[in-house]
Amino acid sequence: MGSKRSAKDQLIETASRLFRLRGYHGVGLKEIIEESGTAKGSLYHYFPEGKEQLAIAAIEHTKNFVSDKVQEDLAEAADPINAIQGHIQKLAQEFNKDSVFGLPIGTIAGETYLTNEPIRAACQSVFDEWQRLYEEKLLSSGYSEKQSADYALVLIALIEGGIILSIASKSGEALSRIASQIPLLIKK
Image (cartoon, rainbow, N blue to C red; front, side):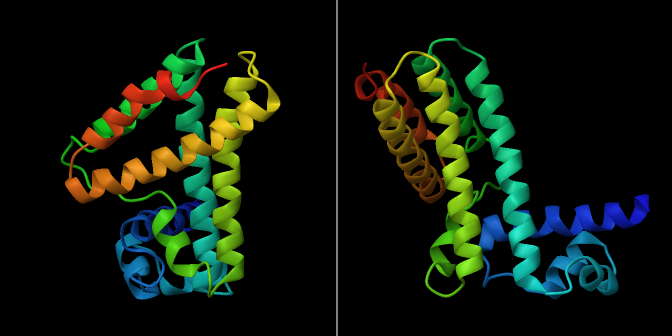
């Protein structure tokens, strides 16, 4: 049973990475199978509905991975401004490494929102979850419900936009500059 679980995890992790880098339409099942090192039968055993079902599992995997990182980063400082700045700075540092960094959900969301409702809904769930994490940090620090919700939405937009700019420039500079502006943007 353990090796079957491992094959499923390998498929999901490989699909997650490839979809982040090249989007849904830029990745084929054959490539996912080859890069994951799993058998074709494993893919159809765990994902009998095929690529869409695997993509939704990969989106969920990405959501959980990023949510854990966001929670860790936000817990590092009691002050929400410092916590959010630190979180964004950590994202910026990812672009200053030699590793390849893709959009966590943006690529797949952008290319499927009109053509695949289940994937669009899965992407929306991700953004809702991430927004909720920022909102909870702000609420726990005394911001009103409306302020927390509004600022959380702004943060998601800034971070996702900053990631796009950082990818385009191959530098975390845009995210660093966004982080520096957080005290000016988020006020009680």
